[in-house]
Image (tube, rainbow, N blue to C red; front, side, top):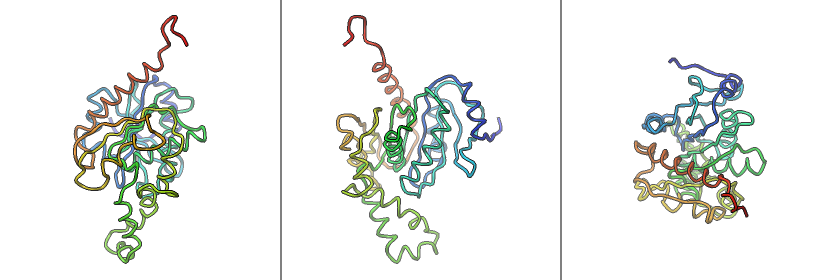
Length: 283
């Protein structure tokens, strides 16, 4: 089937005919794109586990557009475009618009946000801000992979590079991303009073399942394992859980199976918590 372009109105029309189900929104990390999920085989593994391809979403001058065939029934995943060099709040604002287009008005679908690296922080920022403004979609879970929830010294190095003579010369050698990413680097420095993470990690978080997939022994040094762990986030103390995955920072074959297993576990947990109390056991 050829690729088709749907405006937001057409996407909402198709959504209205789809059965209520779960939707996994895959949020890429710094300098990533849809290929971070699709070309690594992550989405193929999700499909093999019963999740259907719900298409790709982009925000343009006329609003959110969707690329793909008809919205499938049942559980589905979607990919999206974000300006990954932009500050966290900017990316989170675009993510909010896309989630609204993905779910449709009055949707009862459960949304699962899957964020890789900085994408996990963007997704969590969206949840906190949208919840405070009472505009959050029904997010059932946040699953992050190698995300710098407590910050990373790599961001400090990026800031320093941008403020050095290298920052002036970088565009001449195709390295303009260092300058374009200064706001993002500032958002991802190790948490401290006055920093974005210092603020975010102490804000009330909406009720959801919070799961960290930690890259143990990340040889890249991009994000240390302790920083990836949401159980260390002060606002999520006792409300998050974590698991250890393979080494290395990037997405890889096998991550789709891990995500599918975690989503299955989340669905089981949500169903148990939502079940009515047995007869005679009401509080």
